[in-house]
Image 1 (cartoon, helix red, strand yellow):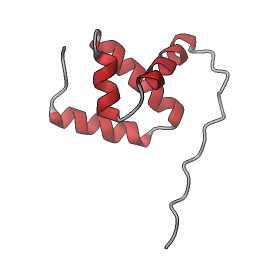
Image 2 (cartoon, rainbow, N blue to C red; image 1 turned 90 degrees about the horizontal axis):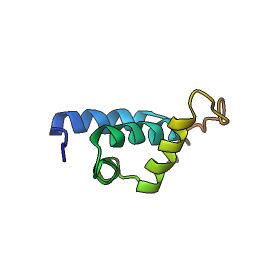
Image 3 (cartoon, helix red, strand yellow; image 1 turned 135 degrees about the horizontal axis):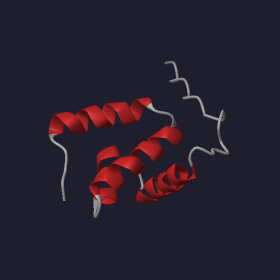
Length: 82
């Protein structure tokens, strides 16, 4: 299976972390699909997400451009102050 070099992996992980929850699962699904067999397991390990999340992202991507959740993106929580 093809994997990405360390620099690209770091860039992907940083980008993944900047996305909304919905966009993270969609991005993970697209990356896994690009890699083919075993891509889901590799991407799940790389992003620290569940393979079921990637499967849900695949279903999301298949339904595009229709998006029942459009406009309902959760905002990130504020860190607790000490």
